[in-house]
Image (cartoon, rainbow, N blue to C red; front, top):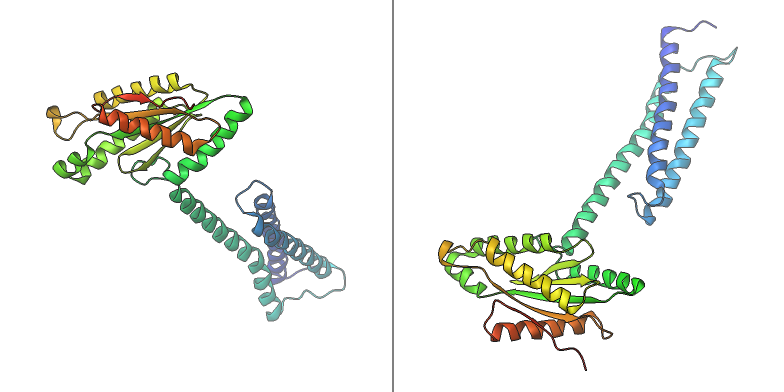
Length: 278
């Protein structure tokens, strides 16, 4: 069977469409696997895409077989070329749809992260801390370990903002966040509750161990976080420590907060522990 150049181009184009469908099928199948980016509501749609691409590949192969069969006339009239473009558009549209879904998933993930992250310090915000702390406490319970919370509050922070501007205050807060990251372990949870108040959940630590950690953080803040006034000032912090007992995290935070304000009232720049519950 001798084919004209246009017929050869037509057959090669058909094979190209099959290849494009198969490549797209591999990409769609990979994205449809559990644990990959698309969420559960998207998987039925991706399953439909797999079926459509398989059907397109098989129909195109059938067209090639029919066109190359002895006695058959190659369908290279104008309408056949238009159908060829339509068939090529199926996998191309699938690829574009996948790209848009990935972009949407990335945007949703970014929004979800922003909703639990403090934009200034990049630490978890109050909501993010609560979520992460709940998971960390569950892990402690499974391991049969205790935990303690530490509340930190910068001393006289309002005077920094009022006297040197909010940009200077923001630099101090970022410096404090850096100190906390350096001293806290991967199993601990640290967050900014708002303003100049920070909190840390210390997994597997007693109150004494958490208080020792808080002392190291307090000293590092004094030594490493520059005060906007230069040599004439020093950034200090007060802290309160409490054990996480049976009443739960919220009760421990209240107890640590009371210890924190007791530290403020007794002179600031110190760490106090909450009294053990009766």
